[in-house]
Image (tube, rainbow, N blue to C red):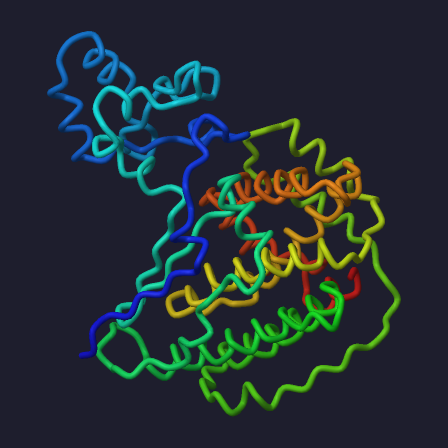
Length: 348
């Protein structure tokens, strides 16, 4: 077997935590799981700080050790918005959750792709501001059969992903036009997957025709978000307040939403090797675009880059790192006819 290939976008290597300058620290809202190695080390820390470490850990309903947050903040986030564990014990002794975030690795045996999460403000800024920042286009084929999955299916997915990226990257069209094309194409590829037709030539047979149709109301998107597992009630109220905003196409925001969409594609598309589901990804991009672009208008952020970063980052933080929300999206996209590909295309 050939040696494993590793692929990093440029921004991954250039990332550096903003630490105390971060406008939305990852040390609040989320559970921080304490891995076994970190817990074993903390159990041997003496003195007052050692007592605080052990007294600040509980077992949650999933059986994980987690820090007991106070006012939605990690107990070791100090007044300078820095980590006392890192300061007192060294960076090598923070738990895996804190050391790794926002870094994401996706192992497909023959190759590994690396990504940063949009839920981190600094990572979000780097991703949505960049030009040609995703350098995975050269992953087009795998060669081996002993990867634990079908080589034929993986190569089919790589081909489909490459064409999806091409559709989303066509800056001669507005992002909304590209998104319509992407949804229609993904629906076609999903049909092939459902029928177990993993023929790369069949993918290339697809022909898209953009037909003008009567627009339908997209309020159902905002109604659905009210039923999700939300950490910040003020945030969801702001989302719903943006439900009737009229979207505007601009070069700058189109470029940013393109990067947001490509992030979703590169982060999630190849998960279909296990779940055989790509249409959910396209519909999640659609939801992210509708909510974030509507909030951009509602908050008057068309000319304020930092606000647009905050909007996309907050959406990711609420949506992407929740197992419950991921499951909810999957079920809703199947059961709610408003989320049929045909209907959501009509809202764009």
